[in-house]
Amino acid sequence: LTANATLEDVRAAAVTLSGKIAETWVNILLVRERLDVAWRQLETNEHILKLLRFRFVNSLATALDVLQQEETVAGSQAVLPGLKARERALLNELAVLMGRMPGQVAVETRTLPAVPAVPDTGLPADLLAARPDVRAAGLRLQASDWSVAAARADRLPALRLTARGEFFAEQVPNLFDNWLANLAGSVTGPIFDAGRREAEVERTRAVVRERLAAYEAVVARAIQEVQDALATGYFQGLEVQALDRQLAAARKSNRQASFRYQNGLIEYNVVLTELLNVQRLEQSVVQARADLLLERIRLGRALGGAWTLELDEPGPEAPSTQRSIHG
Image (tube, rainbow, N blue to C red):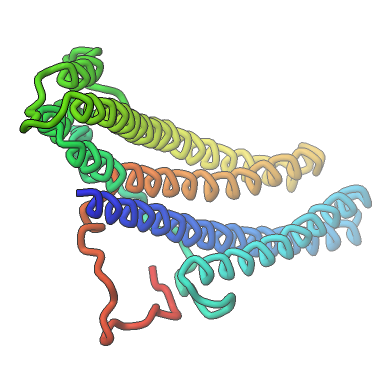
């Protein structure tokens, strides 16, 4: 059992590593989408600058209008080098995480994927039993020869988490606390000593208490991580929706401002304010979508996963790590 617990520790490390790889991959796509947006914004700003220079020559725009737009173009250009450097650094980080040298891993995907939804029915808390760290703590508890505690620890409480990371209202709030209390109470119960000396029995009891406390801590942390990931993802989704609505409204305002400026009804600084607001929101929407994807990754990592049970030592025919990653 102790050896199996150590294997679960290895699987827990695999979950952590896979999560880091996925997060780095998403961050690469985030930077690429931000780069694409930045290039489009630069093209737009340069086009507007040409129009303003034409209007200035024809006495339809002021020198201040042109200078302000030149500043906007320079600002758009200044964003690009930092994003390119960030992309290069993330690609190198991904290569190292995959056990390769920097520069040996390519990512062909350029856009963020759709965000997977959380079931409306929520997630049963007993999914946490698949987490390698929970399994490892349970196996160490079983290895202490306390059969009653081990049997009770084998089943997590029948809780269900909503998509918001909350427990369903009809559940007893202290159900988890009661489960822990019952589990701890088993330590005071009888032990099959099989003729062992009393001192040995007490030593076993002390070991059980220690491992039971460790098991309780692991389960509590697992539930907290899932709750946090669900709740953060839920509210992050609301933020994405709100930003989408805000961006749509800002684009309408920008079009209206441009129309009024072309008809001599407002100054160009009003148009510029609306334009910069649109471009800021375009970047914010991309960032918010990436943040939501990262929360989904953290949720998957918090849930562990049965896929870790399939981890085996690579055989002589095992394929090498792919140099190119597709979306």
